Structure formats: structure tokens, C-alpha cells
Image (tube, rainbow, N blue to C red; front, side, top):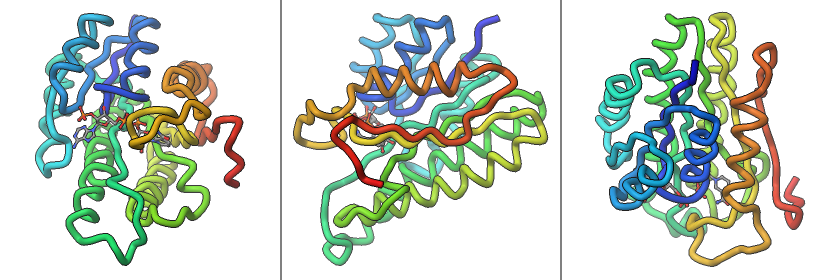
Length: 228
Ligand SMILES: NC(=O)c1ccc[n+]([C@@H]2O[C@H](COP(=O)([O-])OP(=O)(O)OC[C@H]3O[C@@H](n4cnc5c(N)ncnc54)[C@H](OP(=O)(O)O)[C@@H]3O)[C@@H](O)[C@H]2O)c1
């Protein structure tokens, strides 16, 4: 029987490539993001279900998860992929608004979706949550203080959830991609990984790992990066 998945940040970049890779493997996907036109074109291309909303509000994760349950029946897979870095700046030159906005999208929203989905998955004794983190969690990068703090926070929570979900047969995975050539940054980086390569690694190595194995942490980078 085909599995179902909720993917956030699916209108472009890694999330969009993930939806295509999952749909190609007959996973029934609900794709989410803010840009309705881009989601519509993804639906036309893949047949996925779509739901547009701003995940940065307090209520949005609950609304999105309820919509996913309505549309998919059970949600077998959640990929918390939506995320952003507002800009590169020294921490002292940032402000509380930026901190709270990044907290809302990069940490609060995925944490809430983990809580909601895990409740159901634990009851069903099956399911898989994948949190898209970053190699920024493995070293300290100047001028990326807020983003690094949020991704570190979600990495810590992911490690706890790996342990809390395990006795119930539920898989939780932390994925740490390095530089990927998406609209995440203002400038093109053709020397970075293609989003399709990142998606293929996540789908093939993590979500389609053998049943008797779980990938707890997956770290990969473009050939040009050696930040470890
Ligand atoms: N690119 C890299 O080098 C890199 C490296 C390591 C980790 N990552 C992580 O990988 C994930 C995907 O990044 P990407 O490179 O694919 O970036 P991207 O091309 O900028 O895509 C980000 C996605 O998040 C969605 N999003 C942004 N703000 C949102 C909001 N308020 N509510 C709902 N959705 C929102 C965007 O859709 P809308 O604009 O339609 O809302 C878009 O679909 C992020 O978590 C990022 O931190 C990226």
C-alpha cells in the first residue's frame, strides 16, 4: 500500500524536489508553502495535494496537520523542511523581530508538527518524521547566529524525539545537508548541490531505508565544502 506524506516548504528548492521524488515512488503527498501559484504548478506536474499557508503563525502547524489528516487519512511521513535565513549579519546587528520570525518558522513550527504527528504515529506504532536541519548545526558560522541557534535547537529536539519515538516503532531522522543551490540565498551557487540531489538522498537513503534500519543522522555536502 502506498504511504502518505506531509512536506513543508514545498513550493520551491529542496521541498519541491522532495515532493517530485516522493510522487515518483507513489507516495501520496500533501505539499505546503505560502506561494499558491507555485504549489498549483507542482500539483499539475505531480498530482500531489496542496495547501497554502504561512507556517510562521502560532496556529498554522495545527491547521496544516488537521488539513493533512483530512486529505490523507493517516499521515505516514512528515518532512519538516520549510526554513529560511533572513540575512547574513553579526548577531549584535540583528534585532528581536528577526529572532522571533526565525524562531517561529525554523523551530516552533517543526516542533509543533512533530508533537502533533508523533501523537498519532505512536498510537499507530508506525510513521517517520524527517527534520531538515543543516551542516550549520555541526560548526559555528559567523553572521548566521539566529539561524544557527534555531537549527541547533531543532537538532537537540530531534535527538530527544529519536529516543522517545523508538520504543513505539516510530522513526525520526535528522538530515544535515550542506550548501544547496536554491533561492535560500540571493546568489546562485552552481558549485553547490542541486536540490534534486538532496531530495534523492533523503528519499532513497532515509525514507526508503530498509524496514529494519533507521537513519538517525544523515550528513552530506557538495564537493566544494569541507566545513567540519
Ligand atoms: N540551501 C541550502 O544551502 C541549505 C543548506 C542546509 C539546509 N537547508 C535547509 O533546507 C530547507 C529548505 O531550504 P531550501 O534551500 O529549499 O530553501 P528555499 O528554496 O528558500 O525554500 C524554502 C521553502 O520554505 C518555504 N517557506 C519559507 N517561509 C515560509 C513560511 N513563513 N511559511 C511557510 N513556508 C515557508 C518556502 O515557500 P514559500 O515562499 O512559498 O512560503 C519554500 O518552499 C530549509 O529548512 C533550510 O534551512 C538549506
